[in-house]
Image (tube, rainbow, N blue to C red):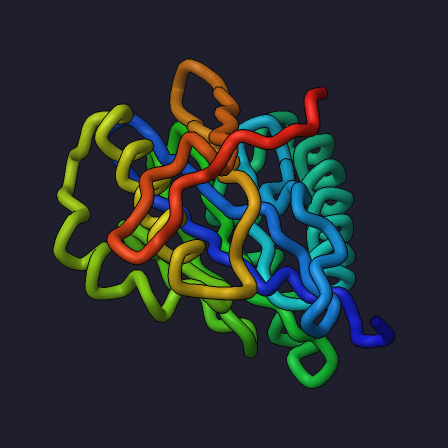
Length: 218
């Protein structure tokens, strides 16, 4: 109970033909205790850029807050929306300059007029990599092979969203620190769309028990 809050999570950012999609589970843990089963791990940085957070909840939140503030000042100075690369560079700079103190891995993704949809991974230590898809958190080790096989360039929005939800559901099935619901955010030239998938809407895998009706009614 006295352990620091950790996201203990699965996060994904993925490019598709017209933009990007971000997805995350919702379980936040304090040691072995589930402190929050419905947390939102996808944070808005600007109108067109979002970040998925993993690792220490406090560290990822403070980095997101600083970057949001700097991007707001940057937008006022240049008179137009900041690019996804600018946002990712700020995340990288803060993560690298404070790498001895921070325990957080982040995925920055969004859409802009310069590069279209783009995904940048900023893992522990402050490296910044542009990738067609990125995953992080405690559940990501279950997903690399699956995503290498399943991801295709220029996927449709619907196919990309289905893949992200299926991948997070797979990580939830295998990783005890991932769980709850799945949230996704789709960003493209037409705007932003949020989607929510409750636990009983996620696909089940061979050794999972199907949810049973409860006597509690809400």
